[in-house]
Image (cartoon, rainbow, N blue to C red; front, side):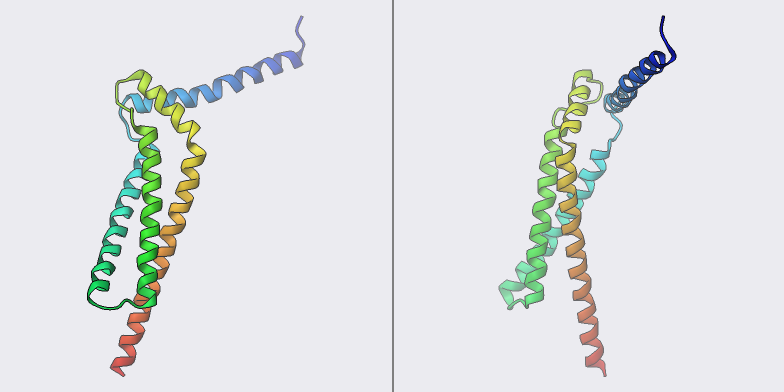
Length: 157
C-alpha cells in the first residue's frame, strides 16, 4: 500500500517529466506551423544593425579618403566595425541553428528545437556582446552629435 509521501513523490516526478515536455512540444508545434520564433526577431534586429554599421563605417571610410579623420571619427569607425563583427557572429550562430528549419517538417522542427536548446547559452552570450557593442556605438555617436552641436553653438556666439 502506498503512503501519502509516495503519492506526492510520484506526482512530483510526473510533473517534472510533463512540464518540460509541454514546453518542448509547444516549441516544436510553433516551428512546424511556420510561426516566427524568438530567433527571427533577434535575426532581423542583427541584420538591420549590421547594415547600419556598414553604412556608418563606409561613410567614415569615404571621409578618410578625402580628409584626415579626427580621433573621435576613427573611434566611431572602429566601433562600427566591432559592432558589425558581433552582429555577423550572432547571425552566423542563428543561421546554424535555423538552417534546416522548414514549416510542416516534423523532424526539422524537432531538430531546430534541440539545436536551439543546445546553443541557447552561446546565442545569449553573443547577443549580450552584440547589445554591448550596439550601446557603445550609440553612446559614441550621441557624444559626437553633442560635440558638433556645442561647436556650432560657440561659432554662432
